[in-house]
Length: 72
Image 1: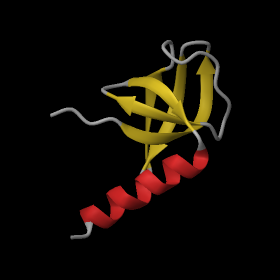
Image 2: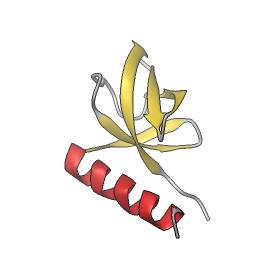
Image 3: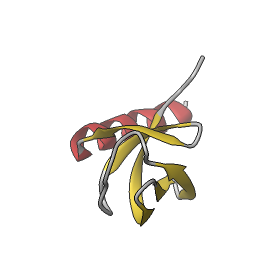
Image 4: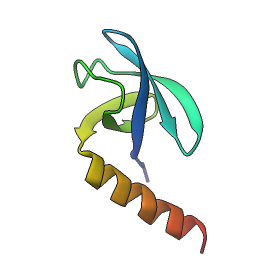
């Protein structure tokens, strides 16, 4: 099973890469599939690639759900 998770963009590195944060962990991912981004945008990330954009409310709700499931 594959999972893609919401992540917040914390730094735009160049036209095709950004630094994202998921649960306090920061990684560089390819943004070639989603186009230009800005700091604070949310994207869905899977294996180092941003696959699409999310609005902030949807991203926060999904992250909260994942966190509550992790505490079970």
